[in-house]
Amino acid sequence: MVSTPAQEQPGVTQELSGQYATHDVTNQPPPLSPYDASEDAALLEGVRREGAGWAEEDIRRLGMRAGSAQAQEWGEQANRHEPELRTHDRYGHRVDEVEFHPSWHHLMRVAVAEGLAAAPWADERPGAHVARTAGGLVWGHTEAGHGCPTSMTYAAVPVLRRQPELAKVYEPLLTSREYDPELRVPTEKRGLLAGMGMTEKQGGSDVRTNTTTATPTAEPGVYTLRGHKWFTSAPMCDVFLVLAQAPGGLSCFLVPRILPDGSRNAFRIQRLKDKLGNRSNASSEPEFDGTVAWLVGPEGRGVKTIIEMVNCTRLDCVMSSATLMRKTLVEAGHHVRYRSAFGARLIDQPLMRHVLADLALESEAATTLTLRLAGAADRAVRGDDVDGAEAAFRRIATAVGKYWVTKRGPAFTAEALECLGGNGYVEESGMPRHYREAPLLSIWEGSGNVNALDVLRALSREPGTAEALFAELALAQGADARLDAAVTRLKGLLTTASEAGARRLVEQMALTLQASLLVRHAPTAIADAFCASRLDGDWGHAFGTLPDAADVDTILGRALPGGA
Image 1 (cartoon, helix red, strand yellow):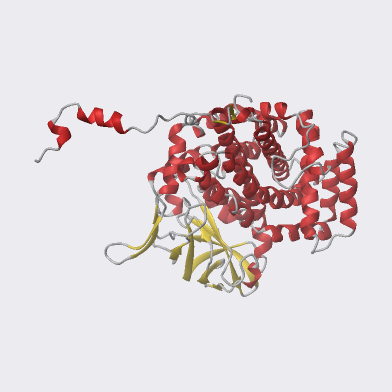
Image 2: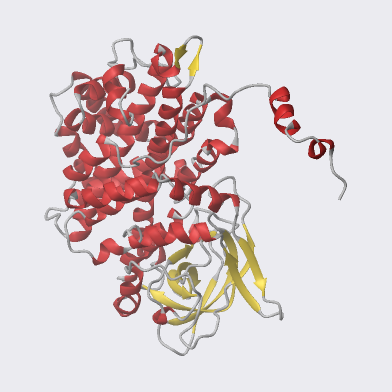
């Protein structure tokens, strides 16, 4: 071996290293991890208020695990090493399998074990659905992609209950807390995951234009499907709820990957989507050709059958957006606490404090609304809602929350990223991943227009929904004049509601509802700043434009871990 000059002269490497060193690394924050993802007053207060105080210890434990260096690394690796499609094995057999990095499986195993999939449906304790949502708000600090299969699994249970004989077989496995990723006969596994296949190329959200056909077989309730789905996420799930055109019209079907005899069902994955974000999670285009499926609900009532799944996954869209807000706020707060510029720490500079305080208001409003929606869902699905008021409130408020909170996500994550400056623009910071994820939540389960129109539909076809919304707002009546004026304006908007003005109406609904919740439940400084900015117009068009009178110190002291 030929030696280098440095090898011939002991000690010269160290000398050269010192000679050519250009700088010491200073003025950079230490790693955020480990941290407690559950250290959030709005979250813990909401959990207690909505009936899941019994779960607080578990939520705190999960928060510590979510903020651990190991779990954060899992999230980073699951997105760096994206899933890969294998259509055939080495011998040429069609297998249609998707391979994931081990970190994906680590994340999934924890999520399922902690009850973040369908476990609440088997839990008789009041508040179980709230506890699940709270768990998602903290475990989501790891990464967002694996929340897709857990969300769909959660949402599949109430749909399957429309077909009791199927629910009897599959529900105990869907509600299991065991993650079993092997592709086997469903009834031979310890736990199952569910996906869904609704949209097609020609229609997207307009599922009534679907062309996939369902042909009855000689066996009652069993059909064969033929067609192509456009956006089916988590193709390695065990069973899927699919919409297809039966002789009686658009219907809902259960499609297993593996049939009871152990053979593979025809579920041919044509490709995986190359997506903006959510890259750890596989989304696919499957083709059905003689695919065996079981009817769920009556023929021709597919949309009505599957709508409960949509309600559940829309709640999870709100939850995931609120989680991204909280995660990026924590990252921004950590950075500015240690970073200095122009002679002072960023956290001590008035303009940065206003930006963070504005973000903190948005985050608390999103979290508080999320938990209120979860509480309504919990009471509605348990039958604790004697007069149906919570079900009616859930119906309209979930669509309102889905529209508004998910719309705020991209702007919020962009502003939080900017708090880190150039540091936030590089992949190593993790902020670009959060920013890419944010738009998905507004698109998934119906884009903004779809949700705005759904609110109009609820108002016109289900009058009890408007009554439930205003009954909720009345709980804060008289506590803040700006809120009272906003409620009056909202009533006026309802009298002239139109499709063209649907977004303006739903936005006003969302802001008024969030303000009412904060007036009732948040510290005065939070409620006052929110009402002044969001309702009374003392606000600009970007974050960081709160009124001068806003109590920024109190807002940040409550919002940021370790105070501010």
